[in-house]
Image (cartoon, one colour):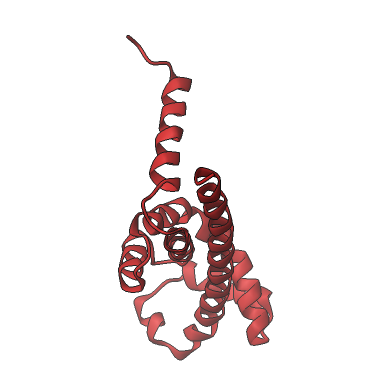
Length: 159
C-alpha cells in the first residue's frame, strides 16, 4: 500500500500537533520554552544547543525550546540583520547607513586582527543590541501567543 504525499504531510502535521500541543507539561512551561527557543534562534551564534541549556537552566519545556529555535534558526537572523542594524544604531544614536557600510567593509576586508581593534566594537555593538531587542520582542510575542493558544486548547479539552 502506497501512501500519497498529501496523506504523509497530513500525518506529519497531526503528529506535530499531538507532540507539541499535547505535551504533558503546563501551558506556561511549554510557551516559555517556545519563547526561549525563538529568542535563541534569532540571535546569531546561538541555536538549539543554547536553547536547550537555557531551557534546562530555567526549567521550561526543552522540546518546545528546541522546536522554537529550529523554527527560527539562521533564516530569521539573516532577515532581521538590517532591522537590527537600524534599531541598534538608533538606540545608540548612530547613523544606521554608516554602521551598515562599516559592516560591509568589515566583512569584505575581514582580518582576524581587526576583531581586536576597539573601533570594531563601534559596528558590532549596535547590531548586537538590535538583535537582542528584536529577539526579546519576538520571544515575548511567541510566549504570549503560545500561552493563549495552549490555555484555550487545555480549556477546550477539559470541557
